[in-house]
Length: 551
Image (tube, rainbow, N blue to C red; front, top):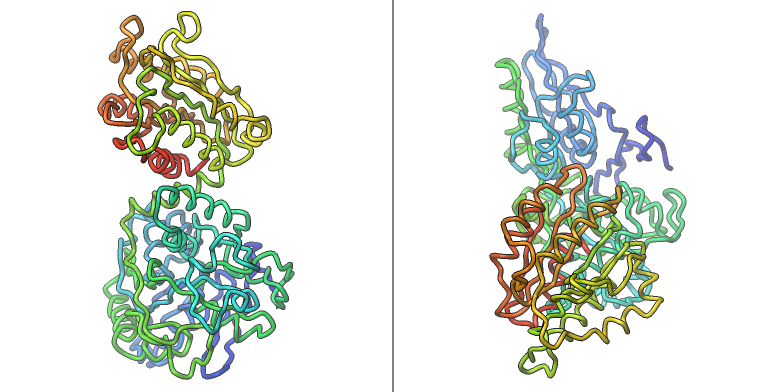
């Protein structure tokens, strides 16, 4: 039953249907009006209020609007996907501007602000909610033990879980995808390899990243809603979407798996700028009805939960969803969301990376309780990190101390080549054989400067260009450049259009965090220190996943 909207993306028809007591209203083209209520009495100049709403909340708004008694006025409810609505609010296309916006998530308000829509408030009163769940094809869920056991995200996403092929609605555009990143992160067992495991999960999901939920549903095994290519069996959706799908397509039902780490969609009732004194009473009437009047009944009929996440209506009889009340996480701060999305962006972008490894004499220091020295722990972490990068990522590894190559403090260990080529060509064995010098000092400044200059000459568009330096000390080359001059030279090499962040990873108690901060901040990068050398793998992986998204 696929249709195409004017913007070229597949939508479902707007068809109210009654099934097991649930009013199912399917998604619609981005600019279809779903209801207009005209004034109850004749008047010369009726006041019109335009409401833009996400497809899943628009039916509830329509039901409420139809029951309002408006004196000399009307309300039009217009359905528009939240991301598209945010773009239209920021860059007007000449169509009438709404007075009220009810997107599916507060994240949409944030997106509108980022795009430049100054009259969009940061928050709005939540009129409904819908948990974000991990939708699993029923056959795959049964293979994991459902319904005799309640599944968690960790169960579904465990490495080697039978029948699981993951997909994701684009987190950069879809609040479902953005909030699902929290659930994916929470599904990873804590421990020294948690950052690497999280990056591996993100890369797994990125293989099937599509525009929206309906695109993923169409790729279920046996789906009657599209191609049914059978390429995905587990992906994040709203509970509301899962309910509607199960009623529409009984041949390929989905099981909802819940996580307390994932915030719900909260449907903020948002009053935009420019509401006239004549429009304000109508807006107030609608808001009050949604929050304290008939809105609750309308919301329940359309398969949404109340704003507080209360239980679904008893007559919504689908064993694949949880009918009870459900506590979920609070939406993180903007900085945390940015970090999540930056990680996701990094996963989907190949990199060009220069890695500098300290091989000075102090790297021979033994690490108590490990039987290894700092050099061995560092090369182990570096070898593991190679698997974080995408196979197409271009990588060069250099070692540095003092006077390693004539008067130069550095020399190439692995040439610039794709990670896949390095792994196939014995790079791991070469790393394992790397030894620290017997008495070499830390020639940090000259090595960083020359490597950064190389990165600038070789900068490639369409890639995340990085320089990473791993060291256990501070600069010890009195004959090389000093810190002030190094910072001056790094400043000269900056080009906002062609960024190259320097990432510093310090190892052990002698690492100079202040020095690394100075160098990395000059390039827009960051410094990370593992005061306990046994934590180098965790810190190294954390730095890569946060700054480079794993490459």
